[in-house]
Image (cartoon, rainbow, N blue to C red):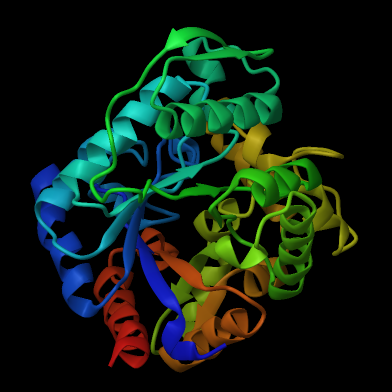
Amino acid sequence: MDISDLKIGREGTFIPPFKSNINIVKSYENEGYDSIFFADHILNWVPESIWTPDITDLANVYPTPHLIYDVFSMMTATALNTKKIHIGTGVTEPFRRNPAVLAQTFLTFDELSRGRAILGIGTGEKENTVPYGIKWEKPVGRLEEAITIIKKLWECDKKIDYDGNIWKLKNALLRLKPFKKGKLPPIWIAAHGSRMLDITGRLGDGWLPIILKPEVYKEKLSIIRKSAQKAGRDPNEITPALIVCVITDEDRGEVDKMLENPITKNTLIPLYDEDFKSYGLSHPLGDKIDGTLEFIPTHYDKKSMLELLEKIPTKMCRDFYLNGTPDEIIGQIENYAKIGVKHIILFNVSILCGLKYIPRSGGCMKAIIKYFKN
């Protein structure tokens, strides 16, 4: 792959105060980033129980990690203050959001952003549903039906019926059209398991997983392409994307300190049991656990959470994070490009480890994007 073809995005979820983030998204566009993705969460992955000054002095400024704004408000503000950068959900889901509403919302946002919308969607997580009285059932089947319904509403000029296990539509109609004639917002699917990979190959315009090592990414991408071929699709029409977590500093010693931080280790709790098995371990939450689906951060006090995080070796952080100096991060990004990633989204986790890392890692991130875009 020609490295000049690689698209690079940022995870851009706002932190209070809301208006202070406008200059940040403008700077991302000016620096040359191709996209900004926003998490559709009510809760952060980080439990309040470990959001304490002895772990990160960011807790002295922000009393809780759960100060999260509505995703479409963040995306709208970004669209109104930028011109070129693509804007997507990273990712939304069909438990809290009905597929017909998602179909309408994204065509509305596509017009508002003048054709820059990307619908990133996955099965969702229990942390954003179960505590709020939303029943968690059939997440994969629900996602497949939701994508099917969205596509039908977007593509059909007539009323549609749909007889699914989750949703049943009768005389449903959506008259909105995309901003650019014939160019619907792409649907990027956050797939990891075999069934989800198959759905991505059959129905997705892009693949948007999070935190995959290069060799695993390459293997799963092959599964998606085989599924696409079997469905009579051109596999090259599916954009291979990836959200990666970044720990960076000009001082390698500071990087190593951040990799030891419980906040950094906590980001690996959403991994799968198979990820831990390759290290001879079980998932800290138990055998055969999908951390993304099962972890609910409000369930853990400080003692129990730190005990769980002690089970995650620092080597896993080294292996799953992009970590190091800007030059080291650049090399790691290039390695992903070589195995097929065409759009990589950088989530700078360094800033969660302490106030001093906000400007330090910020400078590193600028050096990284400058290398690829200048």
